[in-house]
Image 1: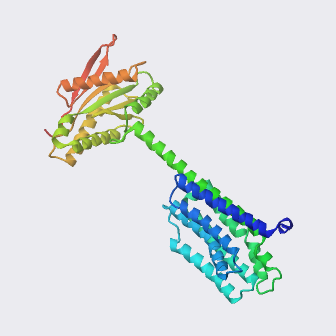
Image 2 (image 1 turned 45 degrees about the vertical axis):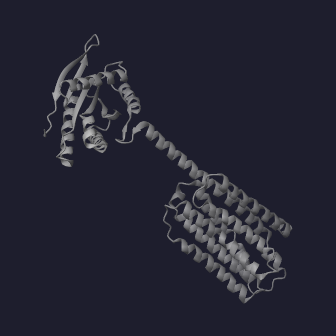
Image 3 (image 1 turned 90 degrees about the vertical axis):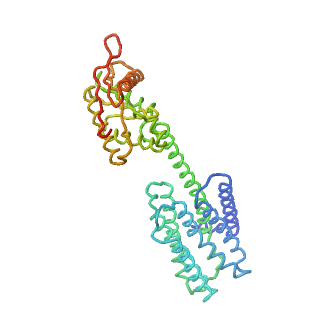
Length: 415
């Protein structure tokens, strides 16, 4: 502290003003040139108002109103920064509404104003009352920041909270000194009021505020970017209407599942909606979308957690059933068709029932997924040739020639 006392206070105070002006200018430039979020401009105004308060201090003896204004502008800083945080984290419900911030600020200023008006020459009283109000503002802002739920996940918000708490701690010695000198004649009030330590603390605070404001903004930008990437991956890998994996994503997962399963232990099932084009033409595309969602929801409900289901495109779906033989897959297809019919009857008994044509194959050892899908699709075409509303279980002989093992006809409960 002895080293600080040897510093030239006017020079140090001028340096502080330059730093504050630079910080406010940087924040303004970022706000005008970069993408920002709600609350950022509150942080910018906090810096400019802080700078204005420091400039007003230069004229405190020539114009007493400037003295009072400088105090008000100095007290506003934690409250204005808090106002920006309220808007930046708008989804967090704080224990005190926004008007409570202004109450804290105005009450602190009125407390200082009352002490100053009662004893204008009491430097100790002025310093003590101002420090009390400043500590109250920082402590209140710390409480509000602690109430923001995101602070537990955000390193930068934790640092901001720590800064607010330190803002309370560093002012305690000044408060004690002011209380001790309250009502006592101070021989050098200018030195007492403008302590070099306070100027250095203010400089550090301003720089830290700019740094944290930019970090919080970039942290939000990074979060938004990660969320955008997640949504893009979802759009690339999944069909938005049915929420099922699309053909490419299904094939990637299916190939991995087949590799991890014993040879020839996976059944592949391709199924589509009979009369889907007629359904769209007669009842509209909304009815077609409803049918697609119905089939996809039933497929998800029927299959096991380790089974895979996806949408190939149009009205055609696909499912991979690990550790399942073709006959069991045929039973799954039968139950699926029955459940779809029951669900549709519950929703719209007047409309013609939705039928399925299903092709089932056993994935052969060393067979590519594309070839297995092609064989299952050919089985679907055979089911339609035999009258639709059927499941065809297909196989290949030793020479690789496809053949039909069995055909299971679905009988809807309505005609």
